Length: 334
Ligand code: GLN
Image 1: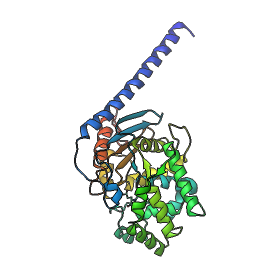
Image 2: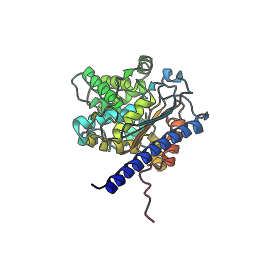
Image 3: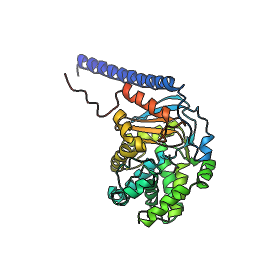
Image 4: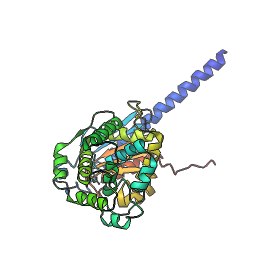
């Protein structure tokens, strides 16, 4: 190799590394801007139908992005913990897909949007034949009942260990949240028994609700959630631990269900604005997945009418727009 060639290669590397560094700096700046822009927003209110959630500090606001190389960008309260609530639904779905393949979900749960709130019983009735989806309560309880395991404890262990692999650390149940919801869970119990009447639950109904309630009470912070989302963005490999958590196939069937129903009756509006699969929880968590690129997570407890974090939606919309992360945004060549 002559000296010119060596120089040319060296210049190429310096330029490409500095553009990566510049890019990373820009991402961090956008995350900080989103934090500053929406920190003062007062709209929305904590969920209170689970009494313990009403007590959570409404001012918690953390934003984290994790890219598929494991770089972390963050602003605000990124280590403040909330219960994962319905965000768990996406990861338990991917666990079942990983264990049993896509046909099991298609045949036993369904993958259609309901257009109704997450705990709607009308949606169950209307979609009795066509099926619902794993992102609303009834479908999520059915999905949890499909996790492999002879006993409730086996299923629970499978869930907590898989969700911990997604997060890259051992997750624990927020006991007061679990106890609070378990004592006040008549609607989910009713839905599980209705599923049983329709032959659409695949384990004991009461135990399935109990496992589901526990999975919803797992305690997470924005960094956990962004890592979990980034694991989906990386096709099932946790980009921080570099461990494969679920198969690429499991991810490819999880993301469409999130895109269809991850924000319940507002899923269409969300997809219209971001183009991204997302998932919210009534604890105030919201995640979005940019396939092949990023996991994005926001924790902020005040919710809108549909049960989606107000600041979460604002911050993710802002980031997606500024960094042009909508996968439907195809810049055509001039
Ligand atoms: N555990 C909650 C419930 O079943 C989860 C709901 C949610 O986050 N949307 O009501």
